[in-house]
Length: 326
Ligand SMILES: N[C@@H](CCC(=O)N[C@@H](CS)C(=O)NCC(=O)O)C(=O)O
Image (cartoon, rainbow, N blue to C red; front, side, top):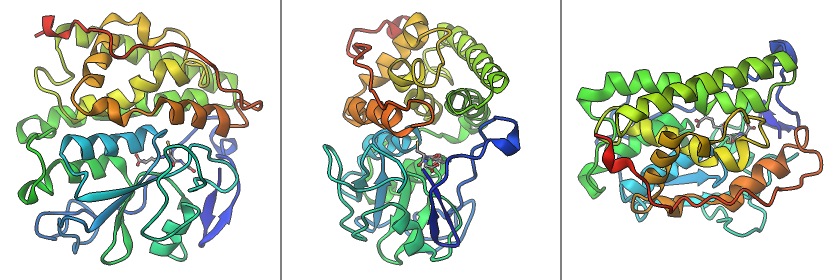
C-alpha cells in the first residue's frame, strides 16, 4: 500500500495518527465526464464524447468501489464498447499490480505492470492515492475520471444513443431522494466498514462499528416496508449498497471486525442482497475469490499471517422472498 508524491511511488500505509486513529478517505482527483456530445459534465473539462471503443476501465474484482463500475458496465450492456483490465487481488508495497494470477486481465492499453504507472501516464507529477476504478481515454491518453460514483453516472446515460441497453438508475424525479440515501449509506455503511476495519484505536473502532450497525438496523427496517431503497424501482442507491452487503459476511464480519450481527442475521437485508445478486448478469460480477484473498492477504497490519478463512459458505442463489414486499 502506498501513494504517489510528485509522480514518485512511496510505500506507506494510511496515516491515522493525525486523525486520532480514525480512517479518513481521500477525495478522488480526476473528475471529468464522458458525455453524449463531449460537452463538459458536472465537473472537470469537456472533450470526452461517448464513442464505442474509446474508453477503458481499470478495475479490481475485490474492490467494492470498482464493483459499482463493473455492475453498471454489465447492466447497461457496455461490455463491447468499454474494454477492461483487472488487477491482481494482492495489493502490497507496490500497490495494485498486473502480476499473473487467475482472473487478472493485463493492461493491453498502456502495458503497465503497476497501476501507479497509469496515474503518472496521465499526470507525471501526480500526488495522491492510486485507486481503482479508473476510466481511461485511449484517444487523448489520459484519465477521465477515477471516482466510482461518477463513473456509474456516466455509464447510466452517456452511451444511451450509441447502443447502451435501456435502464435509468438515476431518474430525474428520484434524484433528490437517491442523493440523500447515497450520502447516508456512503458515510455510514460503504465507508463505515472501512472506518471500523482501519481504525487504530479502540475508541475509534467502537464508534465506527456501533454507528455502522445503527445504520444497518435502520436499513433493515426500511427494507421491511419497501422492496428497494427508493420504493418499487431498483436505482443506483441499491447497487451502491449491494457491493458492501455482498462482501459483508465473507470479509467485513471477520477481517474488519464488523461482527455485532452478520448480514445473514438480517432477514430483509439478506433477502434483498440475494434478490440483487440474482438479477441477470450480476452474479458474473462477483468474484468471491479475489474479494477474500485481497482483504485477508493485503492488509498485513490487520492480518499479519495472511491466512484466508475457509468459510463462511454463503448461498446467494437461495430463493428470496422480496416479491412479497411492495
Ligand atoms: N472514492 C474512490 C475510492 C476508490 C478506492 O478507495 N479504491 C480502493 C480499493 S477498494 C483502492 O484502490 N485503494 C488503494 C489505496 O487507497 O491506496 C471511488 O469510489 O472510486
